[in-house]
Image (cartoon, rainbow, N blue to C red):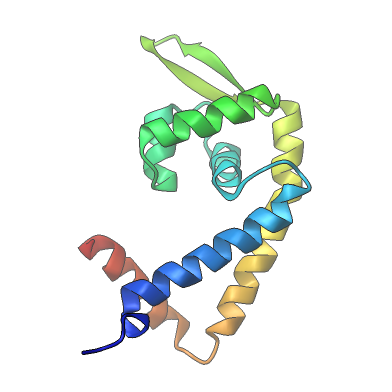
Length: 139
């Protein structure tokens, strides 16, 4: 029988955990986690989005995003406002402090993303990206 360390799902999970630890270590000085950073990055492009829309784009469930937004709100990085078109929902907006922090964090994330791409540089990157997309769609 094949050792479990040779299972791709195990290896991908281990790599993902290492990446998360690295990001969290880098962002710790800013008081932000990896998950919180992706919410901030999403709001840079979609300020005023609802929880459900953010959750879809950052690929987390809505309750998880609600928790992230709660923590970001306590830090003064985002604010909730009632959605005038649907009184049952709220929109999430970046505060000035949140925009400034997201702007400082984005280059760090881009730098780390470049390091990951460099690590797979010997591969055909477009094929690798298509493979990742196909894997996401199949799961």
